[in-house]
Length: 152
Image 1 (cartoon, one colour):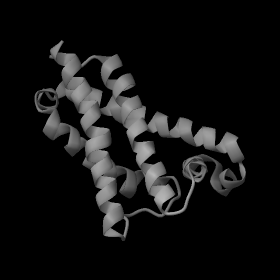
Image 2: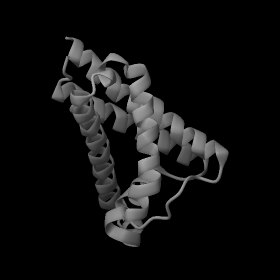
Image 3: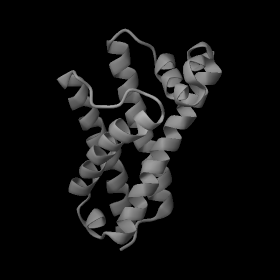
Image 4: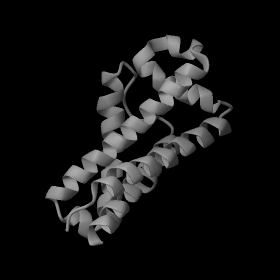
């Protein structure tokens, strides 16, 4: 059984990206921020601090970058699932495990390489939210779609 590229990468990546960005928007809004600021923060990985003065164009770049990252994560899962059949047979385990691993890679490797302060959040609620959204909102949908497509 092999996962289908479109279902896993495109549908899974877009769904994971949507769930992840909605979570970021909600958490940011609860803390008094705006969705535009979230997207500008993402764009600041490429534009630096100028992203915060970049308005809607910088936010649009941030949204594009966010979905590029989500599609890249789905591509990684697709490639793993083609080699590791357990990723297809057990999506309810493999997906959340992949999402949690992705969370640690993003926070401990990718963000520091992009020039951001790396590490895990100090607030337990932020850590739990990050782990939960990556396990259930990123890894699980990608894995479930990969598994479903492979079984068709």
